[in-house]
Amino acid sequence: MQCRLDGQVAIVTGASSGIGHGVARALAQAGAAVAINYNSHNEPAEALAREIAEAGGRAIVVGADVSDEASVIALFDETVSTFGGVDIVVANSGMQKDAPSDEMTLDDWNKVITVNLTGQFLTAREAIRRFTAQGDRGRSRARGKIICMSSVHEVIPWAGHVNYAASKGGIALMMRTLAQEVAPSRIRINAIAPGAIRTAINAAETQGDAAERLLTLIPYRRIGAAEDIARAAVFLASDMSDYIVGATLFVDGGMTLYPGFADNG
Ligand code: BGC
Image 1 (cartoon, rainbow, N blue to C red):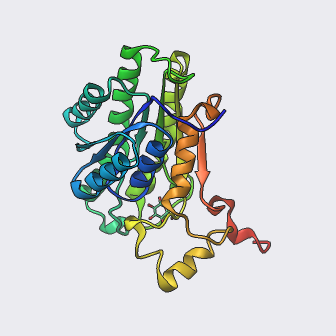
Image 2 (cartoon, helix red, strand yellow):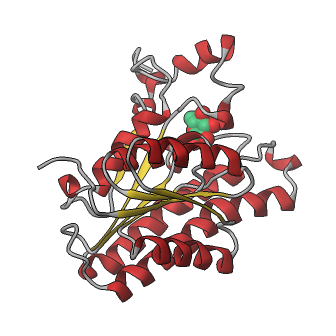
């Protein structure tokens, strides 16, 4: 058995940059037709769609704000009307708005929770509805697969990022609760918890001296690339992981291994 997704249709939210971009490309390389969702920057999403088409794959670009219910429904409508169904949904959109907690505005708290947590809920809810309504498409052992993009900060507290850490902690139990609820319908829901992956979200931390400091938090001594997460997403979307349900796969070079204790604490 291979990690192939031929004949399947995937939606990736927040795919105009960073991890989502890499995940959308990898799903297409594995054979899936992909709906590349963006919120504000369409050009990188269009460029990826062209790249996928040139390589013989199929992709569309769909603008949608995941924190807006109608927009999420429209994203699924457009995908299904173009490709005839949906098999894989990667709820990836996320953002940071960092501040010490005593300076964090209610707006910045709400924005991050609304995009990162509510946005993933709206995306997963719509995926569950579509998987249920369309029945078994016979393309995979599961009727549908959902992958939630979490973070090492679903378990590692992160001073100065309370909105972000709370959103990712929320994703952990949202994902497991949904997985428990819909597994009997053969819908598989899992999560990926990336560590420090070099993208625009953490550009300041992953360069120069800051990168050296960051490496001390990564036992494997390498800052991750979007492709590291993309490979995990292809695996979790494929039948290779068919018995994996409600799991969070940490893809973090060992960041969650408490490296501060490596020298006896
Ligand atoms: C954050 C990054 C950070 C990484 C490790 C991710 O979830 O978005 O900014 O580098 O966690 O701390």
